Image (cartoon, rainbow, N blue to C red):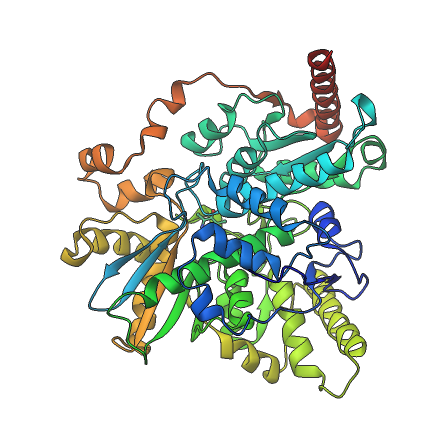
Length: 547
Ligand SMILES: *Cc1c(COP(=O)(O)O)cnc(C)c1O
C-alpha cells in the first residue's frame, strides 16, 4: 500500500504566496501575485517503485502518483481512489492511454491520449479536474441547502479543444455551472457540435459574434469585475490549473512501463519523450515525472511555427515575435491564446497556436532555484530568490516583450529538454508518409500528433535506435482536425469515413443544440447579464426539483 501521508503544500512562482493546500490551489487556479502554483517539493519516488508500480493499471498508478502530491488529510485515500475511478471510467479503452508502436525499426512509439470523451488529450486532465471541483464543493456544502450552498461558476473562452474538454469534464456536476464562450462560426464544425449538443442544465455555451480575442477579453473583464465577483464565485479551468499538470504525469509513467515490457527494450536502452507543445502544460508534466525519477533521457519539445519555445532553447531568449496591434498573452483565459491580430500565426495545428507559453513560468522557477542558489542557503531564502528571478523575467516579458537568461540557465534547461520546430508543410508530409509507410499500417495522424512524429524522426537521427526509443505523444484523434488530414490524404476520403471516423461523430452535427448568442456590441456587461440570468435560472430549477 502507498503511504498516502505526504503533507504537500504549494507556493507561487512569483514569491508572493506560500503554504497553500491542494484544495486552495485547485479552486484558485492562479495565485494572487499573478504567479502559478507549484509544489514546495517535488516528491521522489518510493525506493521500490520500479517493481511495485510496473504492472499497475492506469488508475492504480494515478493513485500512487497523486498520493505523493495530495495529502491524505486533504483527500482520504478511498475518496481519491473513487475520484480517479470515475474520471477514467469515461474513456473508451481499458488502459486509458495505450502506447502503440509506429515504427519497429526506428523504435518510434505513439502514446495515444485521445480515447477520452472529446477525443483529445485535455480529457485526461479535465475529467479529473471536474470531479475534483465537485468533490470540494459538495464537501463544503455538507448540511447546507438551497442558497446557502457554495456554487462555482466556471468561465472560459475557447477556440476549440479546451472548451469541449471542459464541458465534458463539468457536465452534470453538482454545485458547478460552466460557461464557455466561442467565436460564432469560427470554430470547426465538429468542435462546435461537440460543445453545443451537451444538454446538461449546468452547461452554457455562449456564441459571440466576434473573434477568439473578443471572447478572451470578455473573460478577462469578468474576472476583473468586482460586481460579479461579489455575487458569484468564479473559477477557471485553463491549462495553468495545477491539477491539470498533475493528472498528466500518470501517462508518462504508464507508457514507460508499457515500453520496458516489450522485448525490443534492452537493459541499456534509453527513452525520449516527444511532446507537441503549445502552452507547455503537457510537457511540464513530463518534467515533473523526470524530476521524480522517471528515467527519461530527454524531453523533446515539438512546436509548430509559433516557436517561442524552440527559439528559447536555441538562444536563451524568450521573446514574443513582433506584435501587431494589441497584445495577447497568458493570464486568466486560456486555450493557447489564438489571437489573430496579435502576432500568432494560424497553422494546421491550432491547439498549439500560441504567442507565449503560460506554463513555462513554472520551469523557470525550478531553473532559477537550481542554478542561482546553493544548498547551503536556507530553503526559504532559495525559494524567495527563485521567485524574485521569475518575477523580474515575467515583468520584462510584459514591458519589453521578452527577456534573456544567462548561459547557466540555458544550459540547465538543455540538460532536460531539446526542441524542434515543424512547419505546416512538414506536418502534411508526415501525415502522408506515416500513412503510406508499410511499417505503420495506414495509421492516420492528426496534425498535432504529426508534429510530434516529425520531431521524433529528426531526434532519432541524432539519438539513434536501437539504443534509443522515442515515445511521441498523440494529442488528438485525426477526425477532430479532418481538414489537415484531408489536405494530406485527399484520395483517402472513403477510407477515412469507414475506418477512421468514430461512431460518436456520425450525425453529431444534426443533434439538437443549446447555445446563447451574445452580441459583441453588448460588451462584457452583456455577457455578465447572461451569466447571472442563466445561473439564477439553474438554481431556481434545482430548488424546484428538490421540493
Ligand atoms: C492543448 C493541445 C496541445 C498543446 O498542449 P499544451 O499543454 O498547451 O502544450 C497539443 N495538441 C492538442 C490536440 C491540444 O488540444
